[in-house]
Image (tube, rainbow, N blue to C red):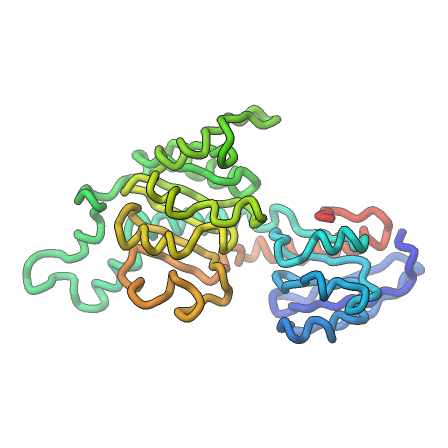
Length: 340
């Protein structure tokens, strides 16, 4: 059990949750709490100064915020999310701060979002919708403008599911679910090995195809890897040049893993057919900070969503259950779902 008898919980992003988080402590431990709908970077130091426990979703906690000078009493960070890249984990290790997350909490919603984005990109749904609503279905009486949106660089028509080869980068919970859904639609699935490595087998005897081969063979490339130094700019100009002009890329991992400038150029050159992303290098994304939204990108086959692939009742239920459980288990001395 935690040796401290008094804990102060700061919920820094309460607006993320559809219902209030309910915390409980075993006998002998007293808890107080502060709930903030949202916390901006300039408010972190003041609001977290007295916390022994911080609950967050995507709020950035850097090494300065995690220093003894700023958060002297901090013992535990409960991340109500799957991704952990918003917290400086090395700084936590050095101070002995325990960190937990909610692994696999969003598998269903994110994998569903992948499939929705696949269909949007492959069937060019957004651009066709715009053509129809702008009154350009027939342009100058010369036939359907929409059909041109369905052709690739070689003027060949759109692929169907049974013709697709899906390459999956990152074979965690989401990657596995995407593979399952893809196979159900009649798609061939390739699981990529690490970049620069040969084909490899995991402990579960999952055969992996070399990274370079996945790029060449895939007509759909799904990026589902965590953000870390090794995965930054994992897909850039060199990788796009190896891909088929029929390929669509889907990124539901983190911004920075796909080089945004290179992606825009690949779409403009039509070296790939289309792309869809739920994440951006800078968030919230805008025309001022993201090449994907800058001038000249409006007519590209690019579908975007505002980092909400996780958003679903099932995900929220998992967060509302797992996060308080992680905190209670910390009180009991048996912390669960540990990251650090």
